[in-house]
Every structure is written in C-alpha cells, then in structure tokens.
Amino acid sequence: MKVTFYSAQPYDERFFEEGRLEGFADTPFELIYQRVALSQQTTALAEGSDAVCVFVNDVLDEGVLEALADMGVKAIVLRCAGFNNIDLDAAERLGFFVARVPAYSPEAVAEHALALAMTLNRHTHRAFNRVREGNFALDGLLGMTLQGKTVGIVGTGRIGLATARIFKGLGCRVLGSDPFPAEAFADLGEIVTVDALLSQSDIVSLHCPLLEATHHLINDASLARMKPGAMLINTSRGALIDTRAVIEALKSRQLGALGIDVYEQESGLFFQDHSSEIIDDDVFSRLMTFPNVLVTGHQGFFTAEALREIAQVTLNNLLCLTRGVPCDNALMQGNADSR
Ligand code: NAD
Image (cartoon, rainbow, N blue to C red; front, side, top):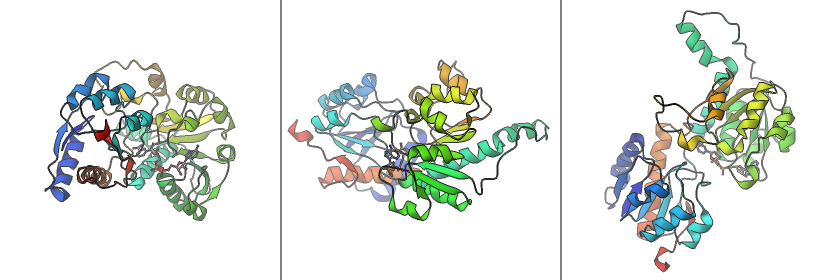
C-alpha cells in the first residue's frame, strides 16, 4: 500500500519509521513524506497512492477530494483527532475510507494548557528575558495564587477532563460546560451553563471541537459576559475565538490575558519557519504587541509519547484497510470500489 503524507515534518518521518519497524515490519507499506500541505495545487503528488495521510491544516474540500478520487486514492488517514478540515459529505459520496486518531495523550494537550496559564499568570516569559538582561525588578510580574480560583472548562471530553484534573489538583474550583458532559466530570467539578461558566471563571480553557455551533463561541457578547480581567486559554481550534473581538477585549482590559496554541488563520503560518519573512497577517501582528498574550504554534500535542501513539494508531488504521476489517477509528469505512 502506497501512502503519501502531506505536511510531513522530520519528526513525523522519525516516529512513523520507528513505528513501522516496531509493529508493522511485515506490512508492505510504502510511505512517501511530502513537506507541502495538501491543497488543490498539490494533489498531483499523491498520484499512484492508495491513501493520503494528512494533518490539521491540510485542505480536504470537495475539489481536493474529487481530484484524489480521480487519481484512484481510496483512503484518508488523519494524524489528528479533529476533522473540521475535511468535507465529510463529499468524502462519503466519493466512497473514501476516513480514519483518525481519536485520542493521543490528552494529557499532553492539557499540560500545555496549564503551561500557557502558568506562564501568563506568573509572567515567566517576561522574567526569562529580564533576568538575562540583569533586570531583577519584580514590577509588572504580579500574579495570582491559583489555589481557590475558579477555572471553567468548555468541553469535558478527553482533554477537558485531563485539564480539569490538573486544575483540581492545584486546589481550584472547577466548572464545566458541555451539551454531553462526561460522567467522570462529576468527581472534578460542577456542570453549569456556558454563561455561568464565563461569568464566574478566573480562567476559561476551551476544549470543545470546532463545529458550526462552536464557531466564534468566544465573540464580543461572550467576552462581555466574562469576569473582568479573566484569562482565556485556547488549545482546541483557532476559530472557536473571534480574534478581532478578543483584541478589542484586550485593549479595553475586559480580558486580562490570552494564551493560544491555535489561531484562526494559522494554516499559512504554523509549522513553518517564517523568521526571515514579513508576516502579512495584521491581526496576528497586533496580538504579538500585547505583553499579556502568549501564542504557541499548535504544539499542544507535541510530546514523544503522543507522536509515538499517533504513528501506531495511524499505521493500525491503514492495516485495517489493507486487511478489509472494520476500523474502530474510522469516520467512514469507505466503498471506493463502487466508484
Ligand atoms: P473529545 O471529543 O473527547 O471532547 C470534546 C467535548 O466537547 C465533548 O465532550 C463534546 O460533547 C464537547 N462539546 C461539543 N460541543 C460543545 C459545545 N458547544 N460546548 C461545550 N462542549 C462541547 O475531544 P478531545 O480529544 O478532548 O479534543 C478536544 C479538541 O482539542 C479537539 O476537537 C481538537 O480540536 C483539539 N486538539 C488540539 C490539539 C493541540 O495540539 N492543540 C491536539 C489534540 C486535539
């Protein structure tokens, strides 16, 4: 089976090659690693492939899927949990097998949410630079003691639960909001409406998927309902937040701090080195001017444990396809032969 990887970084290649040797040595996978992202312009790279392996910012709209189907590609395997970048209706119509990695070390992302919150709260990003320049003044580095503060978790799935456990461990009061709350959340905190969560939380951390219903969940109106000076953390998907509204809320001091690992327009920026270029995105550039904003480039998942799991689960998803057995991680089992 020939599989073309898009958006493949050296670390993807390393963990997939190691994973292949560990558990799939007898399976005839031919893995081709392409650095470029999948888009209408790059579909031709998958010529002759049975499957494409994609990541969060690859584009799988109807046009791309039709081009892949015309080339004989039968399967799409996502190296991630979220699948908002794929037109599922078109994929189903074209008979694709589509599988993902539903969970890979949810703790890795939860721990990154904590890292963002801790850094912003105690200003360690500023202290790092100050001390290196011989400036030991504390002015501007004042934080709050997290014990006893209220943390709101929007989305109580795998990552939300892991985040709730961490904050509960710090002695915080934990609130959750979710249309389908996890039973396990009952041991960690209280489920409330999203409005109650926003108005009571000192830190709001987003862990719900990007859906039509959650697009710009954080907007002018919801920001106005937040506790003045509260912190907002987003390690889920960029478009949960209306970035322009957040900038206004930071300017008015309604929002006290912003920590994001994901950004609405991240696809042209993240996972690449643009340090020698001029960044054209004025919204992103404005965000960079705030001392109380911390942005990381979608690295929440980036631990050795998670990368190992992503490779193992993805290779196993492909193995199910080659063996013709149902795949537990499939969003659709596919019927490409009927094309
Ligand atoms: P999950 O499916 O286990 O949980 C998502 C939860 O969100 C579910 O309980 C669901 O009921 C809830 N939800 C749905 N709509 C909601 C709404 N309107 N309001 C509140 N909750 C709602 O998913 P997960 O594994 O916990 O992942 C959460 C998200 O994290 C993913 O969708 C993905 O976008 C993101 N993610 C980011 C990274 C990263 O590196 N930053 C890595 C993995 C996943």
